[in-house]
Structures are given as C-alpha cells and as structure tokens.
View 1 (cartoon, helix red, strand yellow):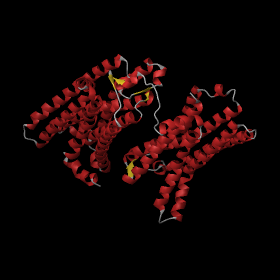
View 2 (spheres, rainbow, N blue to C red):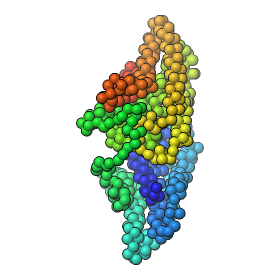
View 3 (cartoon, helix red, strand yellow):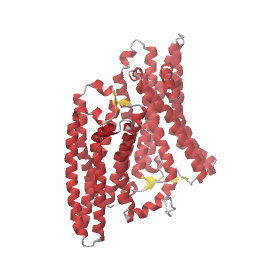
View 4 (cartoon, rainbow, N blue to C red):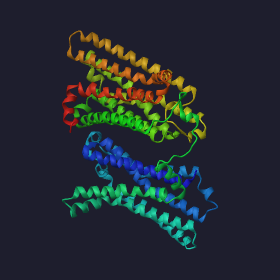
Length: 551
C-alpha cells in the first residue's frame, strides 16, 4: 500500500523481464547464430521497451523521494496508490511511443519475405533504417532524466545540511539512482564501445563483447535490490525472513491448506528434493528433445513450408510452454507453498490455455492426415501455409473463449481481499465459484466429444483406404492411432480430480504421493509422445534431427 515500494517492485519486475529477454537473446545468438526476423523483432522490441522503462522509473522514484522530503504533509495526497499505477502505465506508454513506431515503420517498409528470413538478432539488423531516430530519442530521454535527477539531488542536498536524517538518506538514494542511470546510459553508447573494442582488442573481441554484456546489461540491474532491498530498513526486515528461509509463524486459512476437501501436508526435505528433481529432470529432458525439434524445424525450409510440420511444431511448442508452467508451479508450491492470487491466476490461465490447445491441435493434425490420404490431389490447395497459421490462430481463439470468461467472472465476483491474498496454487483454490466446475465439465465434454468424433471419422476413412495396401495410408492410420492414444492420455487431465479423490479415499495416508504420481502421468508423460509421432517416425524429420539431437 506504499507508492514507493510499488514503484520499486515495478522496476525490479522490469529488470527481471529485461534480464530474461537479454539472456535469452544472448543464448540464442550462440545456439542458432541467426534466428527468424519475426521472433527476433518481438524479443528486441520487448528488450528495448524494458530498457527504456528503467530511466523513466528512476525519475519517478526520485520525484516521490523529493515530495516525501519537501512536501511531507501533502505526500499522502499527491502519491496515492491509484496515481502510482497510472504513472506506471504512463511509463509504459511513453516507452511504447518511442519503440512501437519502429516496428510499424519496419512492417510498412520491409517486404514480407524479409520477416521470414533469418538474421543475427541485434536491433541494428532488425531496424537498420532507424538508427538515427534511436540516437535522437536516447539523447532527449536522457537529458530530461538527468535534468530532473540533478534538480532533485541538489534540492535534497541543500535540505540535508539541516541534519535531517530522512533528507540525508533521500540524498544518498537519489545519488544511487544517478549512478544506476549512468550505468544504464552505457547501453546507448554500446555500438561505439563495441567498435572501439574491435580496434583495441582485435584478438580478444569476443571476450570483450562478453564483458560489455555483463557490465552494460546485467550489473546495472544488480543495483535495484541494493537501493531499497538492502538499504531500506522496513524492506530488509521482511527480506531476511524469506531470503534465509526462516520459519515464520503464520496462520494459513483453511482454504489455503485444502484442495478439494483434502488436507495438504508438507513432504519431508528428502521427499521434496526427490520429487522436484524427478519433475525438473523430466521437464528439462522432454523440453530438450522438443527444443531440438524446434531447432531442426527452423533450420530447414522444407519444414516451415509444409502445413503438417507447422501444426506439429505448434503442438511441440505448446507442450513446451505447458511443461515449463507445470514445472514452475510444482517447484514454487514446494518453495513458497502458497503464492499471490494474481501471479497464480496468470500461471493457471496460461496452463489451461495450452492444455486445451492439445486436443484441438491433435484433431487438426488428424484432419490434415485424412486430406493427404483421401484427397491427395486437393491437399496442396486445401492445406496451405496461410490457412495453417489461420487454423492455429483459431485454436488459440477457441481455447481463449473457453478459459478467459473464468478470469472475468472471478474478477467480478471475488472480493478485493481475496485477490490480494495467498493460496496454494491449484485451479480449485483460485476459481472457487461452483459455476466454474459446472462450466469446466460442460466445456470439456463438448470439446472431447467433437475431437473424438473427428478422430473416429478420420481413422475409419483412413482405415478403409489402408485396405488398398497403400503405404502412406497405413502410415496415416498408425499416426491417427497414436493421436488417439495421446488424446486418451490428455483426457485424463479432465478426470484427474476424480482420480485423485478416488485414490485419496482408498489411500488417505498417501495423498501427497498420489498427487505427485497423478500429476506426472497426466501432465508430463503425454508430452513425450509428440516427438515420437513425427520426430522419430517421420523419415524426413528423422534425417535432419540426427544432425542436431546429439550435437
């Protein structure tokens, strides 16, 4: 409820996002060297936005500090929670006004084939015509920011001569902001610095670039936790409890400790470590295989011009997102036990979306297989690349129309206190209204009946075609059978709560073991089939996959 800490946490979250994107770009530049322009443009835009946010956020924090020192009686009126969130929105709006036009100009001036090409992913390669505009914006932003910081610092410096402890602390805080901003400014002179390093250290240019990356991108983000996380007494008091994992005696509400009427205890340390190692190892192993499939797909034009492989790779990426979210929720449930409702809701919404995408994508893959075998002459006309991307968009739209209404109903019916509380992160504790259960069951039945009808229809038509001893028809029949088996495993998600309740009633003492086992078999193992269906069985994909899987 404190505007100062809200602005600080916004900067921390912004730094986390910026670091994640920059590290991802750094790793991708080593793994792939060049990546698709569309993906690169999205990552570079997000990185530029979060980089632009930092100096603006520092200015807002300095101004809040100035008001607290010079206008203490009006601080509560001027710096309200609502105005703080509005200010954060304006920060993103101003940054977007500086960055988004670059994307729009690129879309308007570059040919369509450019966005399907591959480049080394840096901003100068994506927006080569806009370098001068970027330099002008940087100068304008930084001059304004420095003027504000300088004015605030001098005013607080004068006030600090009165031996006011708050004023002295505010002066030091603004000074740290200025130093942090100075480090952030290095980002804007990075091109000049890199060219200079290439001239000074031609033999060690790669190492020099790595040092620049650490100093320019990572080190400035280390100051944010120091300014408030370690220097602020109030924040430090609570930080020690969490950072050092001290036991804090808190009374959790019964709804946090129960899921579906079953009390959730805590595993022993050894059991928790074993479960988390198994979960993380499975998720990383499957995601490594899936990541290799995606890498193979992006490196060879034969795949991304084929609707079948596009649908397959969409299924693989969807599974990777779902596995990552599952692993994250599982690990966080052991580290934190309960977490904030907004963060938990965000993770659950994404998990539910990707979970619903799977049966729909399997149905579309089965239809594509059916068209290829039963209507081979019309396959090229019906299954085009453009139509394939349109179908993928429709899959996400249908999943979104199923899941997002739950979010709106929850926001409209739940109290403000609940939305700021902490819960054990499962769907039944977040979406508590009985309406959600009825709606979930109804939508699951409709989706699965439709998908099963599609699979049965395509399977029997391919089965009849297979009697003609066509190799492609027999292979198509086996593929559809594998889709059906994968769908059966995915269907277990919709009866998982019934399975857990039934097994818990039979073995009440093993509720934690049951929960873990059911989660692994329902959420993780079905995702292992996707690489098998096309990654290992498909001759074309297998030929290229061998080159990358063991590299």
